[in-house]
Structure formats: structure tokens, C-alpha cells
Length: 125
Image (cartoon, rainbow, N blue to C red; front, side, top):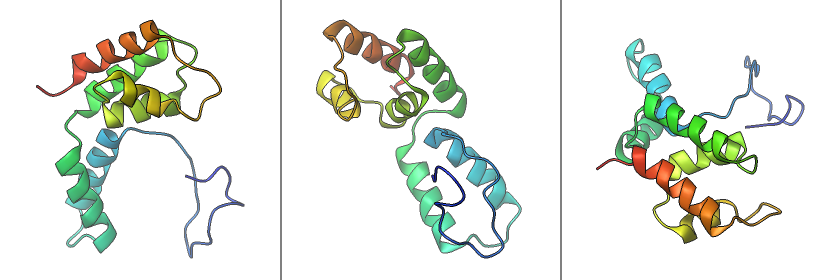
């Protein structure tokens, strides 16, 4: 996503109306809804939907619940990071720490453990 329309590449006949960070589960649902009404999806839509169907194993509802729980755990967890955690569903401490690698702080072992507990509740069995 682009921070402002001045940074966005030029698109003929297109205008960015709103920007919002959303989980891949929601993207999959939105794209499926859009493509119900189209005869043939364009190549990019088809490839994206194929990817999302293969790799996103969490429902939109569960993704939203998990994001809310993560945001309530700590002020260190910003919406962008919560969405990334839900999209990736890291399964161990090193993977969680990798998501936070660019941040200016480090997580305690307890914080990492709490994040993993939340994600475990929503991880597909």
C-alpha cells in the first residue's frame, strides 16, 4: 500500500479512496465476492486467489478475533504487526521474533509466549 496518493504509481482511471491493513483471509473473501460477478478474472486476480486459497487456512472471523486479542496483549503490537502475525501464524519463538525484527524494541520471552498462545487458539488443526 502507498502512504499517500502522491506516492502511488499513476493508474489510468483509478483513484485510491481508502487504505487499510487487512489480513489475507479478508482479502480472499473480498476477492471471491468480486469474482462471483465477473465472467473471467484477470490473470493477477486468478493468481492471487489461487495463492490465498492454498495458503490462507484461517477464516476471516478468526483472523479478526486473533488480531483483536493480539492488539490487547501489549502496546508494542501495532495493527500492521498483528495482521502480519495472523497472516504468517508463526509457530515458534524465532518466527515471532523475526516478525518484530525491524522494531526498535525486543520482546520478552513472556510476551513471545503470550503471542504464541493467542495464535495457537486460531491455528488450523
